[in-house]
Length: 402
Image (tube, rainbow, N blue to C red; front, top):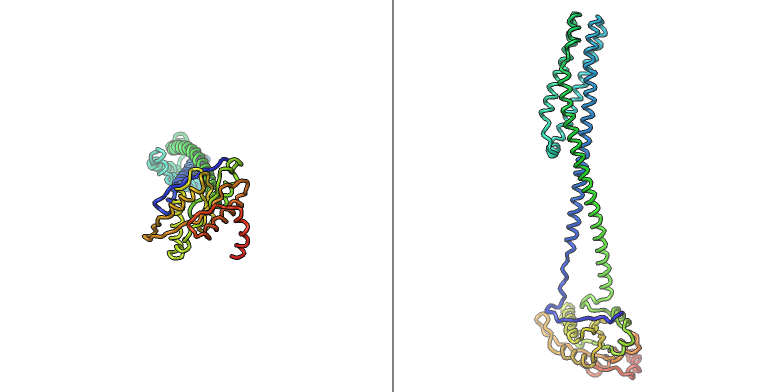
């Protein structure tokens, strides 16, 4: 794993500017596509239902035509009964005609109601309103059934008159049948047009639905990636300063090759006077001070140096340049006052230096730099102290005393 680089710049604002978030745009696109798919599906269902209704009407028209044909045949049976002087049978046939006439009236009225209900959608499909055809059917139905009924009223016809009616009487059935055929042809055309458009809309809806599912899965994947990145970032960074935390410092330290370790030093920095500022002005001001301090310390580092926060007001640095020179630059850059909420505060730093990490682990190197930092504090603060081996001897006793 190569040595990782980091860089720091002074910011006019103590807190980093949040990144612009465009997640709402992807959700808006997903909502738009979902709405389009839903609309297309509803339109497809409506068109298929309309086509089925038109097919039902044509089937009903065929059934009505069959029934009307049988009804017309009742007339010939009645006239035959008159011709044969079978008055009782004629009366029975006449009752059959009356019942059949009522059934035909009811079926045609129900058919007209169904036909009127799809008028708006028929016009959207490019077909003119059916009012004239329905009016024509109504007129010819009355003429046909009225003529049939009138025929049965003539019970006193002579044999010659009955024969003449059998030869020439048509009861306007042809006109009635023609009206049925016109409506049937029109509804067949409407059903075909609605079915074709519905099939196209169904294909479109399927495509949009597939696109919606793809976008949804893609969005979920993006959210998972973003969540994983955020969790990894939180696990390896300090939430206040956004610096690498102790865990990331150890990872970067362990990634150093033996050759890199020969040129790497550790600096342990503890801020002098930070607790006094934090207690006097509050934690918000203390947080602003920490962020601004990070900017100043970062300006003293090279592009390959690493600055991490150990916790509280303690920082640990992994530097490749001269550690004593870096420590001196840090002391100088922290000397000017910090202006926070129109208040000037002063802090300094006690710095422990481990000039060479050698074969030490991250914890061992940090411990030695920390011991050197405490030695700098005992020496009067606001200074740097280089670690020496003899400092290890008194460390347990000092800890026990504290």
